[in-house]
Length: 486
Image: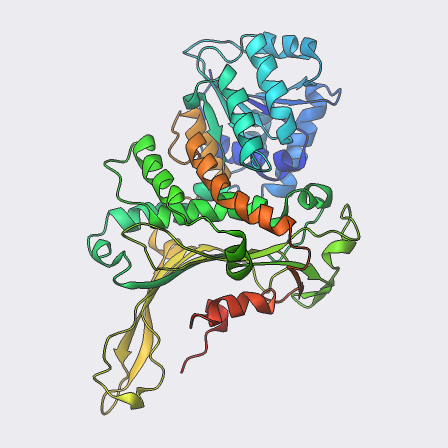
């Protein structure tokens, strides 16, 4: 019997992501026959009340679940229960303990979809009530800490009660199909490896743009910002996969060993370098998709004089033999022109144009890996245009994963939840990975605290502050949407 316990079971993350993901796995027969789902939160609900909330969440946010029927929903609700649990009340955990059979044969997954300050009290009580014994695993959501010191304190506290192999630090970006395909792309294709280094690659761009603002998370986001919310986890995880050396095998720790090495090789900025190699911005009122949207400081829950960044661009460098001298340009922002997530590998230009100077634009080859909104891999190269003479144009070898495979697309949360239930740690962040990321981010955050003038503004619906374009332009580069041939 597998038991899934969701702390924060009435929260926004539970409704939007976790419950629909669990239901999708259930509908598609990915859960064992004796699976049980227990929602846990401070509200005094009965299981029937909670089942109605679960049904409402599935109706509202489970639109992508294929195969759902009224019968399937009824069956899922029949294995759904609720337990009132307040982390400050030890007696509440006695009721939870009564519902869970603890043994090696009965895996239990505790998902902490709560604020980070609740992680330790919950785990302390789980341990005190014998619930971390047997085959127990604990999933913790980001952000894990506000800086390296607080993250280390949380890790040390978790390790008092859990072994490292019981801790699943989730980053939903690692559950995306194309992120996993990065591993296959790099290590299952022989033609790429000889080119995957400083000799052939000009620079690497990793960009995640969002059209949404902070929505209902203003009070949380203002304490976090784009650096902690996106760069420290999502973008640095993508950097580690792009930059890592080949692992000795596909075991979780072999892969994570190489990711850690890549993160540790990131060049740590001095305060002077921070001012030259980073850009932070905050959106003001504008329009997205033709609809007027407010500025960040007028969003609900945001202080009117907030200095929190909603946009970050960084020129990062990796100090090792493979990548020395190759810039990694990182960018993320809210209220941007489009929603997208892309990794672009720009190869160096050809050494000599044998077809003469009259060919027009000759942008170098590039490999574009799209993570969202569509998943694809495109290799841009030059080919001859039809007709007399030789005139070149750019063409793309386009691999559209929606067309290549008819298999069901598994959303990232569903994949990661299943991996956690099966004990597969490959797509979860290890403690030394987390600390390596914070060790790189901390000097940037500290320098920003001492720089009251560095926060730029940008219009909602744009591509961010002009300074982000200059960050690349001064080195002869440009973001993909800004590139002008010629």
